[in-house]
Length: 268
Image (cartoon, rainbow, N blue to C red; front, side):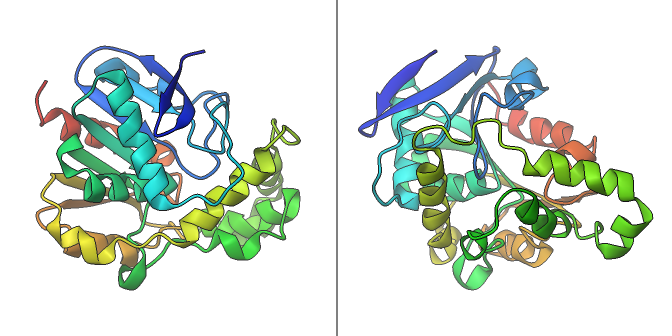
């Protein structure tokens, strides 16, 4: 299991593929032990792909102290240092997109091209769904609450019309195969607390890195308005909406190829 010490933290990462360097930054609760994941898909066939467990999650160290979005960005930069990467293409999904925004703001020379998927800028530009407000919900109750937020089409009428599919979706979302592991609850909570403080809105106009903003038309976690605001703040960025909710990368087959094409425009 590859690990490096970066930004004072033992970080677990995995690397696969050949081609241009691509750093993938995962979303809330991301854990590389949950398969299939980004390492099993098209990105691994097109790039020298590195994915990692963020602080407090998976097999990365879980220090019991407050985390900040700057910490997460500096972890990513530190991992690149440990890999010997001066720069890389970067894709950040959901919470990972928040980390990626902080990374390109704090370390602009490290990011060659950037894909921001289903994420938000925070502040006056709009925040993603406030997970810190539903910490009291766990398991099935949390899954039921979030189903129509993940995809606004999956409302009460849909649930009544598709009871079996509704039950399957709830059961899948409510399952945590690593519940009870030492530090898991604490690390996940620390991530949500840091997420609540995400706000790079005023810093984004200074970003000059080429950016693709990819979003789901029916995403209630990273709403369409926040995507429009991101595009306005990031001058010269490209905004594309896809047919899906927060999981549009799995729902719309055009999404991942569009991201790959954008990243490959940066050359080797």
